[in-house]
Image 1 (spheres, rainbow, N blue to C red):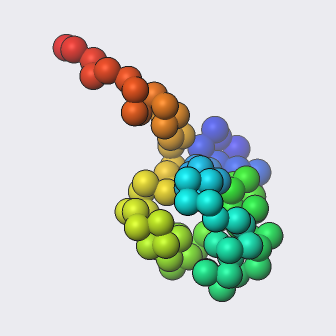
Image 2 (image 1 turned 135 degrees about the vertical axis):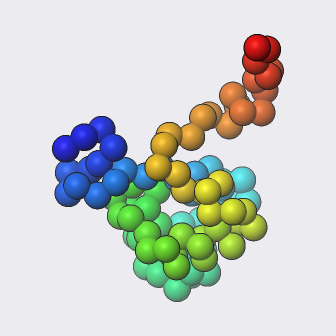
Length: 91
């Protein structure tokens, strides 16, 4: 197992579901209902215990009006505070 795969050999992925839900005041159940999945699926996704299908990932991104790569990534996201408040590095 490498640092880029989980215990089953699947690629690790990262997501911003909890942050995005919080920003819009959406519960896990509300997101699940909008997607037509069980609310526990959202918890599994947020914890990285379940890898979404491509269709589910696209539907989630659509709900938040974001490109899928803004919601899911194969590399860790930089903290939002760092992205918002950091100054550009000078060469």
